[in-house]
Amino acid sequence: MATTPRSPYQAAARQLLRTTLLETARELLRERRWNDITMADLASGAGVSRQTLYNEFGSRDGFVQAYLLYDADRILSAVEDAIESAGGDPATALERAFLVFLEMIVQDPLAVTVISGDDPDGLLALVTTRGGPVLRIAADRLAGAISRTWTQAADADVQLLSVTLVRLALSHATLPDGDPAETAASIAKLLTPFAELALLRAAVDAG
Amino acid sequence: MATTPRSPYQAAARQLLRTTLLETARELLRERRWNDITMADLASGAGVSRQTLYNEFGSRDGFVQAYLLYDADRILSAVEDAIESAGGDPATALERAFLVFLEMIVQDPLAVTVISGDDPDGLLALVTTRGGPVLRIAADRLAGAISRTWTQAADADVQLLSVTLVRLALSHATLPDGDPAETAASIAKLLTPFAELALLRAAVDAG
DNA sequence: TGCTGGGCAAATTACGGTGTTTTGTCTAGT
DNA sequence: ACTAGACAAAACACCGTAATTTGCCCAGCA
Image (cartoon, rainbow over all chains, first blue to last red; front, side, top):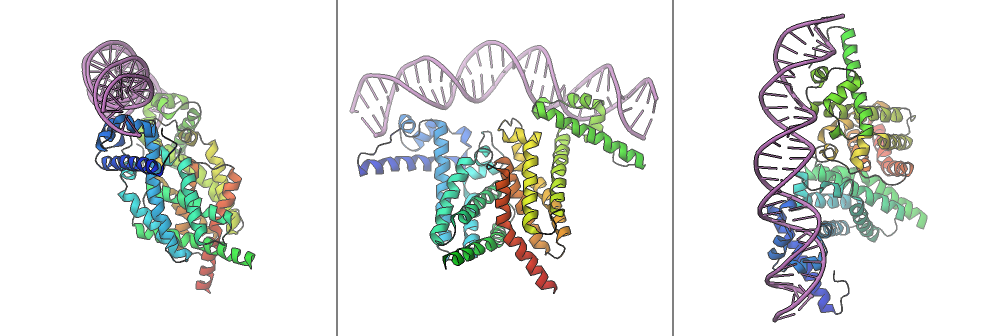
């Protein structure tokens, strides 16, 4: 696995290689399940030798994990944008963020196959019983976005809100609940009181 | 499948039969996985003929579902108690309820095998991708307990709180998060503002 | 009436062997 | 760095067969 970029070019090239492969996986996942996609398919689909794929990701399992992170990153970026563009209002930030999440999830190839129940691999476990890493990463990213927007808020409150949001997001990803817009509104309605109270507390502490 | 109880005695007898079988399953689940427990094991373990077992539960799958409900009922009852004995304070009610849940889950044979990742059956799916029924049942029970304790609260608020509590409970059941007491406290801290606001709203609407 | 116990076909699962595919690694070549 | 070819080892797909289990029917019995 290449680890030490010696020049900016090489770093960029490596990045291109990775995203090409990951994006290829994304496309392939649209038509067949992960089980039916071989490393050879992946490599040739990306126009790359199988060996290069192994050099970059180490193993098949390593690739799934990387893809999961890549996938999570895509969603998290959108959610971060939603939060930071909400103009400082917790209620609309929460609602927009959750809505964006739900909308991206239904379009996500990996998520779709998992939700459909057709899960021959232990793929569902990666976001439930073995979902620790994903939860931590996602919660940290969220916490970052939130505390960037509400700089006064106490860390503990932001952490709690973030981790719970992710848990609820994963819950709704695996078991949707009717209209996404309605769901997002509900979540916002439920969590807004806590968020506003946290901001209030912070303001009092500061002033 | 017997459906029409003609006398109180027969109803009681049938109930006894069911709980005996379900309780036997619970014991057997402590030592082996559901996969390795045959209907014959179950019947003989309960001191009952295999045919009786089939008469009562219809099929193997019917039994799992019944057991799931039985198991859920046990937990829900404890949670209901916790809520109703909290003396009207939302914060302590939420904390106690969640704590009771977490404590019961780690002792639950079925839950333990699922969490351990050793899940040859599609058992995990029953509380995630296929968890619709469980979610609805549990949320309804919770909603009942809550609105029994806070009669003023608006139905929509109670519903929302209940369904979210169950989602979070299932999330923490499949992916625990350190100290149960701490977790329960966090959940309470997060949801209390909404609960108290809901009560306040109700009081205003009423008065 | 409700439970038992035996019996029984059909479905499911376990096993063993075979051939193929795929993974993961190593190499020489560009 | 990436490719292309080769390779052993592991994983997987079949296949037929045997054993187990399910689900149901029925006769007997309290």
